[in-house]
Figure (cartoon, helix red, strand yellow):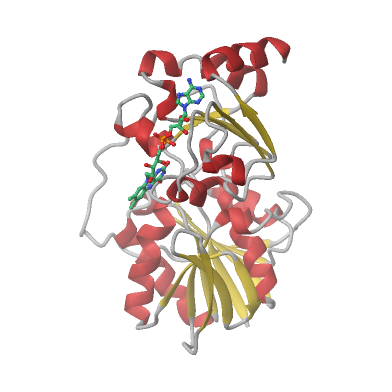
Amino acid sequence: MTTLVIAEHDNAQLKGATLNAVAAAAKIGGDVHVLVAGANARAVADQAAAAAGVSKVLLADAPQLADGLAENVAAQVLAVASSYSHILFPATASGKNVAPRVAAKLDVAQISDIIGVESADTFQRPIYAGNAIATVQSADAVKVITVRTTGFDAVAAQGGSAAVEEIAAVADSGLSAFVGREVAKSDRPELAGARVVVSGGRGLGSAENFKILDPLADKLGAALGASRAAVDAGYAPNDWQVGQTGKIVAPQLYVAVGISGAIQHLAGMKDSKVIVAINKDPEAPIFGVADYGLVGDLFQVVPELTSAL
Ligand code: FAD
């Protein structure tokens, strides 16, 4: 039994989500290999080889793998799939783009968004926006799985010493071409992996008012997040949305400001280690999941909290 984890990276850095997927692979048992499909991505392969619990890294290095085109990466995975009992992807935008293609080509059912491993064929996954946990068992010969990264603590980035094996890259499928990428530049940590997140909701009232969260986030070294209502109202950018249809986060500290705590929002943050809620309504559902609740007007409380910090 050997598990292949598909690395997420930008050809220079291995993304942290890969280390969460390796942790899930380790729970399955057996050897854990990592596939790095990229261009000039040797440094990424070396980082993957240093991750705890990885016994081998496969490096497919070619220009057609530079930009993570799903058609090419899926073909690369399929080229080695026959050697593996389990193929794991982080349940990120790119993992979710490739995994279904691999599952379909292998004619197996994808097992999506697992948060627990009970055995080599039995897994836990949230359903109904996290209100219930389904235990699913697969009889497929190869298990193609996406891993909810917040469900597994990352393995150590250092300490391993796996061999890196270069493998032949698949030819360009010609089915898609990379056109361009617009990357939001920010000095703040990336929302999905941040240790601290400060999120604002409709209670902020406007994009201008949303800036009241900046000094608080600065003090805490936090990423900024938002509820869907705040995003829909244009107070915050789309990629800040936390929740069922946004990002799933599980930071050490989550501060929810002017957020009521709708079930779809909780689905994205309720696994945070410590939750602080600031809301003027003492009946707001967010207080049901909060470790610390502050009932008050955010426009008074947030500046006070910031200056106290
Ligand atoms: P509200 O529910 O309007 O809450 C605003 C809060 O601010 C209130 O509790 C109020 O008491 C408080 N407040 C107001 N003024 C102040 C003040 N001055 N000081 C302190 N507190 C104040 N939502 C998400 O967030 N993420 C998702 O991914 C998501 N996905 C969805 C998917 C589906 C299919 C559906 C149907 C809904 C989804 N939603 C999602 C929307 C969700 O149901 C809620 O509508 C949304 O989360 C509400 O956002 P909010 O808490 O900011 O707004």
